[in-house]
Length: 359
Image 1: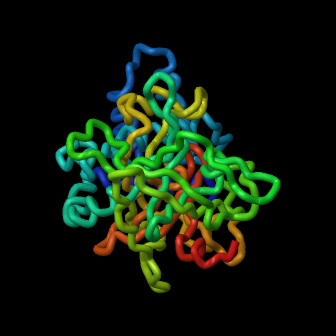
Image 2: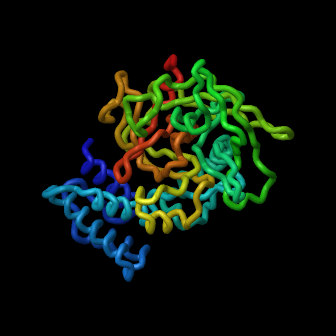
Image 3: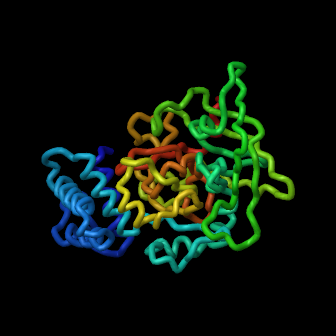
């Protein structure tokens, strides 16, 4: 699927999830376009020159998708992404006390899907941890996300492991001091503190060093043994999908990602859209719903046999190593989020393929 088709697909999801007019694949109607632009304009300060540039880029991007004449520029892609994010159809919902606020207006049409499985949602949220290092100013630096898939076993990305540890000449990993895996890491948690743990040893990881993020052909996986701090107990593992006939990977299937979106580097994303969407709160646990884009075997540049699929849940850098969970009656892990292309799509490894690979 090319970039224009990816963006059209995401805009169709935008219209359908909100119950408004669908932005159809072939023709972006004038009414639908103006509705989308008005929604974005309501989220930014039109008196700001940068906001006006964003709105104009969004308009030009929609015009491109309607005619596919000219060039789809990076600014246009950011503008289209801003429409999708500002609408709230792909929210990044704050987690507190192992739950989300079901009255959050951003939850939109996801309310019925998320609220019907509240016990499974709470159970899943408690098993995802923030991998971080404390800073001298009392804050933390988020290195990535990890989730429990075995007793004392944390799954994450190889590129997150590379931030956590140094690979010695002997082929062993030496973890950095003061690393903390926090299974809370929430915004304004009021209940008892969640489990804290430290990494012990690398059980498995992909053999290739990850130098460029979001490359589908490269496996980006690490499995780390962790140990709870004194007076803490690790949560039980998440349930992993093993069904070869599951519909969870089908294009358009609903899913959620859970992780710790970190504040992006300058110039990486449009700051006004991000601050509106995240309200300036980064490095805390969030749940982000979305849809499968390219199913297994459809991601350009994937390995053979294929082991990647794409999704459009809202993620940032700190989501690396987070789980992708099928939004059905089982809430099983279907993927390991490892990257993507800004304004286009996110990528995840099929968890079944990852766990079967002998690295």
